Image 1 (cartoon, rainbow, N blue to C red):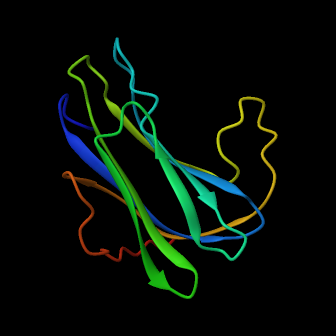
Image 2 (cartoon, rainbow, N blue to C red; image 1 turned 90 degrees about the vertical axis):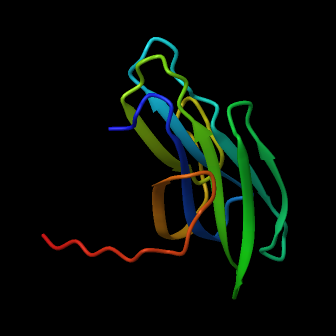
Image 3 (cartoon, helix red, strand yellow; image 1 turned 180 degrees about the horizontal axis):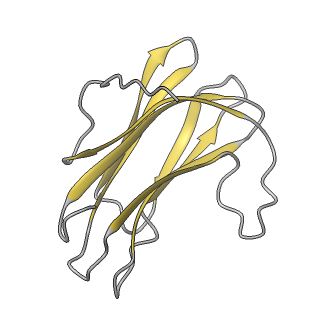
Length: 130
């Protein structure tokens, strides 16, 4: 569970599919003042590059780095606010956030990582078996 004033960074590797916009988001939930606008919207260019990014109001920092072959590491950093939030919720919306769930399109995703700190560190491979 996140500490009440932790700064965390959510990063993920993404590559354009058919979606024109993507949202990478980190929320803190469960307290009296939830943080829900810790998002960065990614507008994709037709050639698969990132045309623009737009951070939400709760974002401390965000960014993207090209890692080759159309892949980008995108990150968003958000600070918890001391209101008792006990859940950090990283999310990826393929076609941006749509309330009714009607997002359409595709996106390639790999290597999501949530960590304490105000910037992404080197990717840390983790393995899970069922």
